[in-house]
Length: 484
Image 1 (cartoon, rainbow, N blue to C red):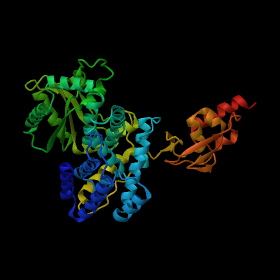
Image 2 (spheres, rainbow, N blue to C red):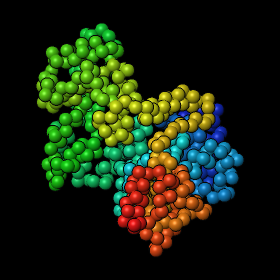
Image 3 (cartoon, rainbow, N blue to C red):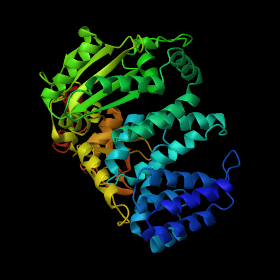
Image 4 (cartoon, rainbow, N blue to C red):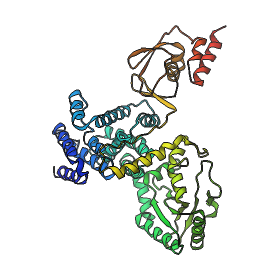
């Protein structure tokens, strides 16, 4: 109870004084709803809920996000919805309803994780519910030891395969890394311990990182222009993902296969400054010229620019560290523009050309930055987005999600389920109402296909109202088999 009381005090001390009464009222209501509810370890459920809300404050989100985090486990029955709408507003109810939708869609075992992630992002026109679920997951993972093993495995899998990936898409890298490190320790303890041991043996830690950072800063200090040095130690889960195709037993993992265990970027003002920094580093260290890349002179197809290479400073250790040198404009473009890691991840191509298809990466960043300036005087600050607009995500009655192209119809959905279902489809229900096979579908629709076992193919006219080239091919192929 002492922890709960302290978290309440923390929350009320840190929220904007203008909205303190609203947050206090939300805490009282959540206290009432969850008064007798405990977690597996006997901890009051309200303590976890309040920690999630505190994370929302620590990450500089608006008051309605904090209130929604406090209320995110309140059952959304008619009575509770009416009370929340009246006392906290329709914006909070909308956030809570989307949190419930996210919770439900992650319960399916038939849908691939990648499709669940894309559905969540595509259907969330305001990203605050997604962020609350990421924060909720982070606190869950930190306190998962007492959860029964079967449930623990499911929760850990979701944390690593869904919520850490969502955090990555939203450029919340610090939350992604925290989820991964905590979940990895519990989900794959042998692999986690073996990587931890090898890193300890090699003294790869924050102390070594700071020694290298001091070294780099001292090398570039005589250069009289703006520059800053940023560094990180690679996360253990990231190391695992790089090594898993090589290692089988995990008794003695070769972490030296990973070439960026410690990595830095040096950010400056001009291209000329980048090359002056490069000269200084070359004079003071031992660069690996075989792995040297100058993407400033020769940018990648997607516009990515930086100079990057491994380098060794033997006065510190024999470890090769990775260094990237770039301007502020390059850094912004590489992080939030068409060359961002998220654009690469979404396009699945390292050779993708610059495109405005991923403008949402930058737009989300800008909104979050702007919101942080306004959280003390504005209660409701949505984070709007349109992600994966060219795709639609449709549910089967059992909750499986299928991804289709924008403009696809009920018959396209039937063929996506199975060629035989497409060939024998005669009608459908969409969201519980009768619908034609030519009906165009929208994300979130629940579709049930009615079939006739005696029907072997679709008629030629079906070609006019299917949208997918795959569906058209299947219809033509079956017509050629069955029609003289």
